[in-house]
Image 1 (cartoon, rainbow, N blue to C red):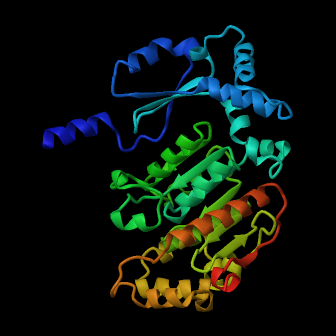
Image 2: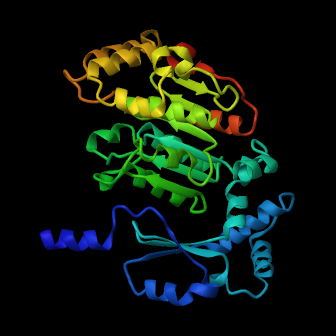
Length: 370
């Protein structure tokens, strides 16, 4: 049995999250070599995708099946269908998928965003970079952002691996247990849209890599902060303010959304001034001062920052039982999903200049639906 498990581990690397691209005009030999592995599943719907492309380009036309097939033939113009577009291989599930090329793929995949997001806005969003710290709540946010395609690059950071207790709220399965959370998120994004650039920090964020996370390859357009580490929570805000990067945080208990527009308000106190003593620290001082806080000290800061009045009655009970009858911060899948929606919506509007406020906002279902 041990030999079987070792053999499987060699074939599938649990840290793989980047798909491989093959253009048959130049990569035919490489793809032929790959396909010597007869366990690979090939998925080829390229002609249907071309048909969908044609329909999106001529929305007023109504084609019969035969007419659309003829249009596909005309579109190929003698090109072998196998040579059209790009082949994408996902090593973690051994799927080889034939897709339209990048521009045509994006055009078709986002065609039903129209005109909720205009073509000009979609073009603007492609240049944006969104950084997310914390891939429990953040995983759902990252997946929603990618599905809506409101950026061209996602930066994901979390040091943790998936545990069984995470499956009450994360979009993952038992086959992912033990896999780094950033890898699970990055794989899902690649399966939705392999052309979105994803960078991963599986070691999490520290004083040594915060600068690179926020600014390596250009400043992040927005920081979404969803981490548990109190020192990272503060230091990332201080560094974001220093660089003029807006910060968004969803606390998901009663749909509470924090927005801090450091891009528009460069001297704005972090957390809306609710912990003035933290506002005076530098990022380096934050790591030194806060990383060794006791649980009680961290809880005191969190109570001051979030406000006990901004928690549900159920959460108050849960918090009183932390480290007594429960071991982790309580979260529900429905609240995490709501958080993904409101964070993604806020990110899109900030990136398009349609939302310029800082503040604390609530989408509290118990108050809205009763």
